[in-house]
Length: 385
Image 1 (spheres, rainbow, N blue to C red):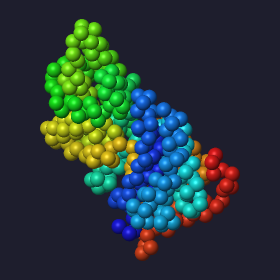
Image 2: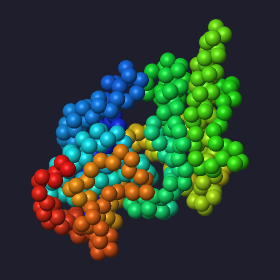
Image 3: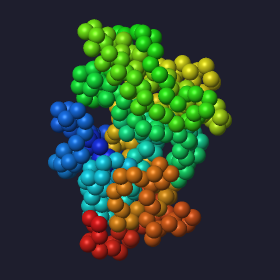
Image 4: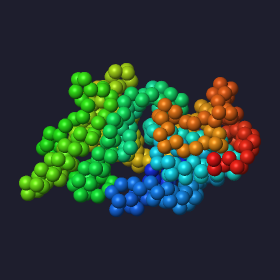
């Protein structure tokens, strides 16, 4: 374990300030500072509030992670940060912090993709990812089916949401039911006491002519809202638990059905599920049931690693170091719409490193050694570019 890369990861794509420390595929620390309570009264995440919260939490959270891991910042082999996708202002806070720490410490900087990180985090739970990996990512901003032959360089989108993401639909229905924010956990809890067959809500994009791997939850959201509205207009009580269970069943039915189909079509015998909605108990149980029936191995990280966290960024960063992927340049910037086809943002000056051995990554009695000369070749004026 001592000769595996030691990486610190910073995640600030939304409302969680996450800092993780990973050595290889071993999680040493996972520190999180959440601003969710500050957003609850608005019924959703307010970008400006999230950015300010990241600014206040960044240094204390990094210090807490290093202390929890029992390592010094100077022991690190690299610093990874979410470069996108996400909220632009929130991402900028994380990227700026990562640049500052990497520059001062003389460590390579890796700007990585948020979605690819959600896939890579499973290595901390179940060991190295099979290649290729089929991943179903479900969160407040994303519902995607991805095929990853190589998590560091080759992630291929098979399908995605064309409107509302699954987590977004959970939040909106919770708002209609007056259950507060975020909606996912409370709907999951209430659904356990309801009947998932009580109301036959629609399953979007499941017709024979519909896109096989794309998702749509806007129609479902509207159908549920109208059903609730009709009950209230008629002066009838809304069976909240049955609504929650029936709505949740419609979502997880579509997610798992399409994921299993993608595995079969691509000849992949493993399915990884990640993202915040992967913490949903019904999604986990139905996915397990359908994977068992199809002879597919299901990999789902524990709930804490499914939501946004710094450990997932560190995990992908460690994989970048291990495979000698080129570090990012100091002009790395946040990209709110960074495509998943770009698992990381390599520096233009080091694009050749994939072929010639990267940053001098080497195993030895003292861990890793890297050629950090490029750190000092650039002006400090570029630090916050």
